[in-house]
Length: 160
Image (cartoon, rainbow, N blue to C red):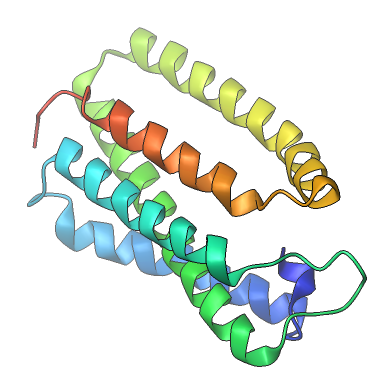
């Protein structure tokens, strides 16, 4: 996705990297005041909205051309927000994981989540490539994942 932009790919990487740093500072001030389930639902809802908007804005280029600069800014801003929300959600996850569960359960849980994430990361490029090759908008897949995450967030325990 990032290579479709007219902006330098390293600048795109810096913008998305900054979102990780900003989310860590954000969580520092918010973690004591917002319940975990509420934060998960809100952050996944924001991701859902951004992904839904990107369905209509982002069109992958299969012919080697690039997206005009005016579209780049909007897409990069939406990706910044998505990356911010994902990073903030994982920060919450690790903070509450260490407080709620004993070490043995934590290790098994983190290992399972890391394993699942590694499989998803390995398969994601094939999903994106197959979506681009068939003309299916890849942002629909991300939107569906956000809906599934919101539904799963309702089953989290309600703790602060």
